[in-house]
Image (cartoon, rainbow, N blue to C red):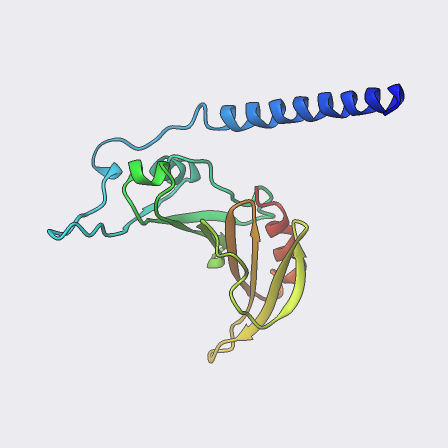
Length: 195
């Protein structure tokens, strides 16, 4: 190996080490100021035979939902006029087990537009399934990930769009009522902002 190749390898190793340090520092500081629930909200109901039941709670802020599962949660950063009305969280195990990585968590964010309630529902699961559940629809790229989008009309004539994708250890499933004020482009823009 030439000395030039050794220098390039040494530089690449240095860059990789710095990248690992930066990512580790981000992950450690991301939860540094995270508040976790205390008291009875940490527990799930347990049956006499030892079966632990999921605990479902509703919150009005994302911070309260994050405290319930003691981790940062992904949510849309660009709401484009929508307002959060409710966050429902189902925690499969008690908080201690959830922190240890046992059991799953399902969240559902509900957003309103003006006077119309529940214009957008965004469901988030972790851990995600290994692949997108079988869905019919068109391929769609969301956050550089392969997703599926489909359109439906209810018996009452309400049109909706459904988008599903997996990214960063989370499974996302969004359903939006569409109309003159809320369509495909606006929905995709909001979903692209989920972090």
